[in-house]
Length: 255
Ligand SMILES: [Fe+2]
Image (cartoon, rainbow, N blue to C red; front, side, top):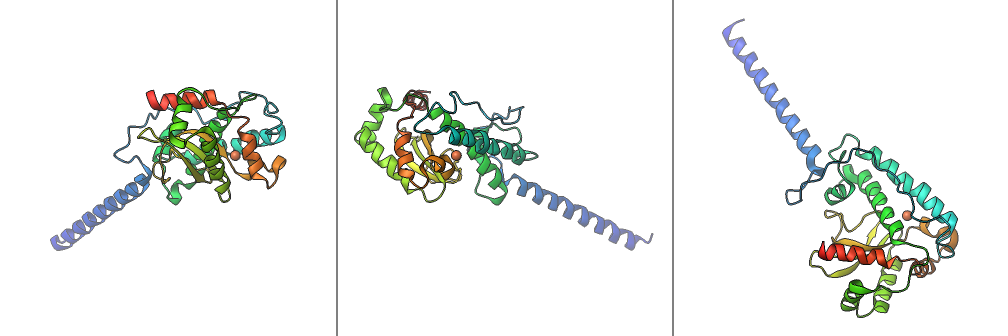
């Protein structure tokens, strides 16, 4: 090969290789846009099993007459199961494949690429949390440290209830109403659309640790209450497991 031709070919191959490396680097960067933000703690990354539907701690008819058996069976066995199945499918071959759920929610973004994980990861976490918030023969009013915090933040339990009820009524379409504790340890009420939740640092306006959550999707109440969401919200207060909510509060406050 003539020296000049050889040099040209070498130069061409060098540029092609550099371009290819550059393109691969860009692709990697694009893939990693959903990865951890630098300020976040290192993920635990130790989940070795697929996500699973947790069993209810009570029978499907145990929340009657407030939440009916058929709604509970469909809500838990069909809707929640679908979130679990779709989440397992969505995390495959992504950076989140072996992340614990809360590590995923902390990092999830509003990008289209994250949408399926966001919706189904939120769906799985929110419903697991919701089932644990409920109990048969529960309700009443909070006590102890949590009662004091609610009184200090909202004036009284009745005033909290009024604000929380209004928040739950105000959700347009599907979503959730929350009582949360923020990083500054103050309580706040918020709502999220769809299956978003306050743990989603990069998604929600107000980030915090949920203490109480109410599912206001129609699938949660339509069989019994049809379009009467306020009646469903009123029924929820008869089922709140305040011991569990108080434990969440103490954990958030004191570790
Ligand atoms: Fe639901």
